[in-house]
Amino acid sequence: MLESIQKGVSRAQGARPYQEDHYALADEAFNKSGFALYCVFDGHGGGDASKHASMNVPKLVVNSDAFKKGDYERSLRDAFQEEDHLLAAEFKGQSRGGSTATVVLIAQQTMFIANVGDSTAALAIKDESGRYKALRLSKEHKVDDAAEAARLKDADAVVKKDRVIGPGHAINMTRALGDFDFKLPENGASADWISPVPFMSKIDLTPQADFAIIASDGLWNHFTEEQLVPMIGELLSKGDTPQQICENFTTKLGKTPGSDNITFMLLHFTWGKDGQNGTKE
Image (cartoon, rainbow, N blue to C red; front, side, top):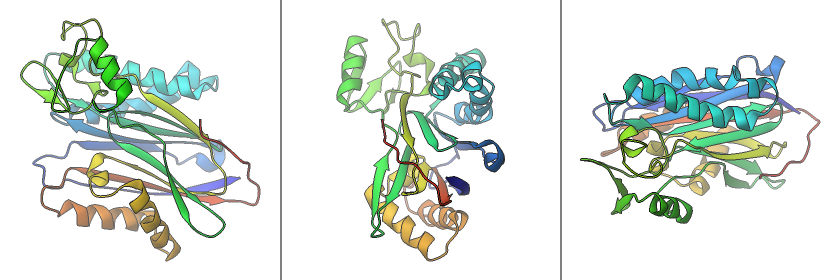
């Protein structure tokens, strides 16, 4: 069984003038309750939306009736929708900004993932020979995705040079919290262009699951999952802690010319003798 989760988390502002990334986590009671929650939010057009989401999404998830009934996927999906409504009530008409959201909920030995935008979650699977396989758990919502392109076309969205065009500005993703000038009724279309409805996935964790990464695109601009996962695995095998690894990466990458805001969250799993096989849906 999954006995414990050792975490690390670190941020860097990079070359950007402001820090618009925020994160939230709630895993102190995992050993007793079997529940842990990890969230990364990457703001754009300001940090108001990402900060607001980091303060509210965890509470919306765990306080929901769906969560209490064990419907964890619905609790995540509803939290995204409700947070979008809360952002609208507070910031609509005041800000053009929005935020990605990638939320990972661990319930006993099942991991549930919900995301909008391009902050990515990945799982490292280690085989008997010690080799790693990187498994992406989230989805990048971009205009070059066939399903997203079809959705935008049906909603009469204007798309140019891989961006959704709004009144006076553009955005390079197709799903996010906030960004209300791309949503009903401001966009004057038949549906939202920038949708708050998350991509959902889940996976039953097994002892082959060694660690997970949740990070904003400031990290993934420098690495693919296939490149990063073996590097992290080697560092962990040498005795580096998740916190040391996160801090070392963000410090170095944050000094790179042209670097974006970076948030890097690393979860290292400790397993007991008993485990169950699982599959990703």
